Length: 117
Ligand SMILES: [Zn+2]
Image (cartoon, rainbow, N blue to C red; front, side, top):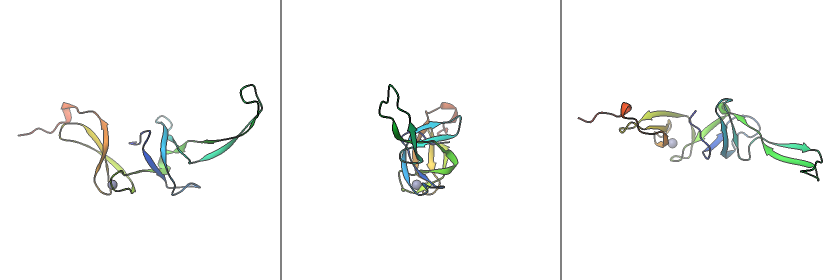
């Protein structure tokens, strides 16, 4: 998964299909992420010491990774992404639609650097 917090993703299934939002949290273990404004639910809270008013609290619930696509910064399309090594051995993710790089996902490693003749 090449999605990180602060990326923009587009939802491709369900009630929120077509809406875009910023990634707030990613849970790699569970394969879920929380997207701003997507999958909002009302949580009914009882009156308590901390919340003397009680009432309804609107919050985002996590969505499955497979239900979103990362939005390319270069071409603006929701696309699938791959990973490739750069000449200096850094790993970057790239848009499979336009082929542009969209940020590094690993620091340069000499092991993967392409040798220059
Ligand atoms: Zn692109």
